[in-house]
Length: 354
Image 1 (cartoon, helix red, strand yellow):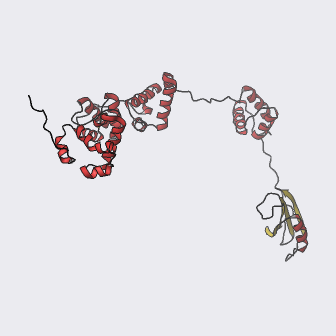
Image 2 (cartoon, helix red, strand yellow):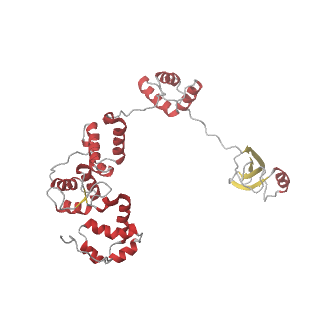
Image 3 (cartoon, one colour):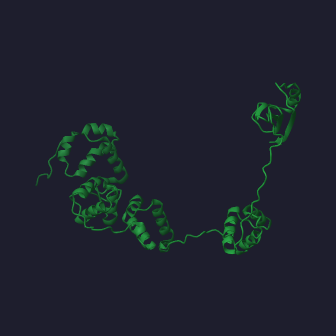
């Protein structure tokens, strides 16, 4: 009778012995996280026992609870295997070198994303850095796409954006590579997603709204413009009376165009004589002016409406007296007001309500 294939060993928790007895890296990884997933031991306690980083144990335990045994292998649950530099095929290594030569500012993780989209294998970003800086010579001798404004056909510009985005390039990298803005790239991709092939056509830069200025409106402005005394604001008011709503600025632009076409004259501005200030004082305290304002909404403690009475000295234009009182208080106070001097005449500028 043949003997047993495996010799019995004593059970042990010594990590050094367990490492010697494990046959596969996946088996060793499971033994490292087994107390965490079976007995709910903390990652910190396990890290001290086996001298493994605490964060690594916690992350691996979370991946095992989420994905099971598949998390122990190199192919994780997030998009493809993490390849090493030695196991990468030549075409992926050449792609890494070409991407770095074509767009040197592209991040290593973005290059890994491009490799995964094209070949289904995601290299580690550290290996990508090593391959890009010390790998084979680039196979590209010129740019695949010219800058945005150097591509004459608008459809070809947008196709370049769509192809680069399909390869895995980010919006920032595409905008920097084509020497354009990120909003332009976003708008191109949005139109492609919503309109498909029709989104490649250039949109005419026209006003989408309804045009208010019709031939009828222009003709009415021309008729009014025959009067040289009417400016854009008076023409605007006259059109409102006809039921036509056009802004004064639009009236001014149409009037300027009509002057060039029909040879119409500009509105004539007649000079006005400068009016002298009424009750202009020639000496101090010759005339005083009183300004009375009735205020209903204010921040005074008393909520009742108040009269704000201000007295000005016309020669120096200084405030002689200023008071805020209710009506009853004003009647009582005004006869008791005493001034250092009195004017020859006192004018009231009126009462303002606010």
